[in-house]
Image 1 (tube, rainbow, N blue to C red):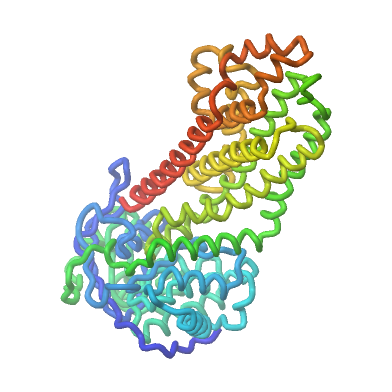
Image 2 (cartoon, rainbow, N blue to C red):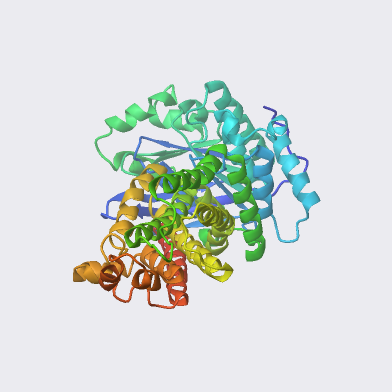
Length: 558
């Protein structure tokens, strides 16, 4: 890794003053208590302490990601556009894309409006060069080594030349030689004027820093100063013994009280709202375009995802061909019970495709979304971009499904207008399921939880739709629940367009009239009513997804 400085003029470093910081969790337990410290511009500062001491909480509070429950954070220096950079422990970049493409999308989302393609290319090349990643630009992020991925996450933040840079455990899990190299890069950034604040468990990192902040097990400040001063303060020859010293301390106030007399007064600072010290935001339309283009490229480059997206419809078509005989919709000799099942499984197929497309979209990139929200990405363009990429895929899949079923005589003999109505109903059903999948994906924390939700979401859409048991024949509770099933409205809309009332009433099968009587007026509504309800589900689920993400963000900030 090269440690050359970038050729662009550095941004002046930002000094930080924390005064009386306190932070609590929901049960009222204090995880930070009366933290006051000062960080000078251009310093590299390490925050250490035992697990649970509040290192990450302090880092996020200093960075403005969490609002302090008590006290204030002040900045001395440039705190405008691009001044603050934050790299969490998790990867904040998509693994499917080549590194250079990842940075190009990040630059288009972060750099000021009006930044042209040439400037974006130059800035990306500059950052890659400064971090020694130029020859890795064409490599997918998922194939980079752990140290290279960490540098790649740093590269995303360096695009805006931050004045202060926060990193949570940047050397965690890295080979010692790679960790040393990464600390050299951070030192180079500090020498160029960027203030660097990091948390670490690796004591070897501390001696490469200008200052060290030590937290007690109770989230109080035990010491802040140079590593040499820390060894003198604790009476240790090596800071590796500091954790043992903290563990042996029986009085929670002993070390904080002892250090209080040596506490720095800190630089003059101007109070600001940390949450407001962000970027000038790129416009919504540009964000939508960049996010949609990135989503499309991610889908196209992920072969497993493509195989699932395109393979599941083929599997469903095969099962349809094996399960149902042709001619069930023959006007002269219809088979009413089979037509019910065909229409239901078509509706459920559209629902299933949409649900599986959306269910893993957000939970798998929550760390990326959190970081991009700090960079100014809005939730509405983010969600619309998801739909804008996935819905056309669903449109193709739904069209292929109906086209093949019509070709193998598993659909009613409708004209062009009738086929278009069937297709519209199925596509709206898929769209409603897609947005339901996005909602559930936003509500869970990882892919495993989202996968567990799949059967819980599908079973009600089978039982309470009205195909296995007609809605009029359900108990009162089931009838009310059926209104909340988007698949019900797709099933009834398909049945109306297919003309099952006329087919069952006039056909030769004696089963038709009594079956029709059990369904009551289920298929009597104009199809546009079903479309309106399905469209309402799309809007409702998208709005609920936005609310869930906003609430998750506010809980994290509190």
